[in-house]
Image (cartoon, rainbow, N blue to C red; front, side, top):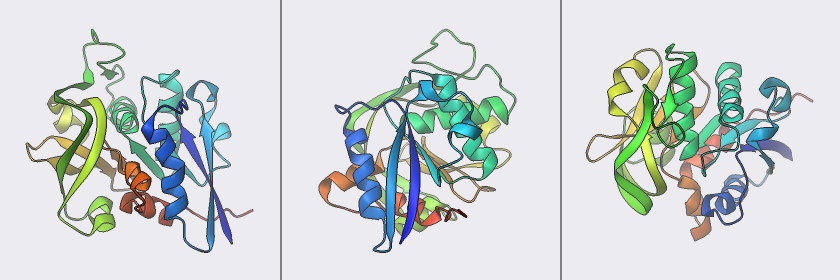
Length: 233
């Protein structure tokens, strides 16, 4: 039986619905010949992401930010992006994935988050025009992305618990060299991004993991699990 270890980068809180859902989502997404070990990695414990996360087959940056260490989360995302390690980011993981990309690929070194630094000049993540706390929303999936491939349909409905999203003023900067928006709401706001040059790098503002608490196999989590490489050792 193939055994995989997935790092859940975030600060575990049993009261967070997504934190309860994620290990179950991974469990139900595993095949009959697979086992998945979910390991919570507190953001403040990440000092050297390459060393701290090298033993994992995949990395999931989880909801419930602000994190204890924003830099720890960003370093974990950068490691996944640069190493080719399968990466999934949901909710806060989406927000920090676009900040990491803005800082380290687009050169916007002071890219910031309105929740943690509202006075910053470059708020790549800003307040949503309509808060999505315990709300569902219809989402349009773009052709050619892993999201569309995972769901197999043009439109989906997923759940949220967030008040911040991608600031539309930075879309041109972010989407000109490899990062792709692959899901939008009906108003055209970006709800997911993918890195086309990466084996599996997907981040969603919504929380697909919640499906597992309804007894469903989340299609995106299943695709993430399918991308996990078998450890050589």
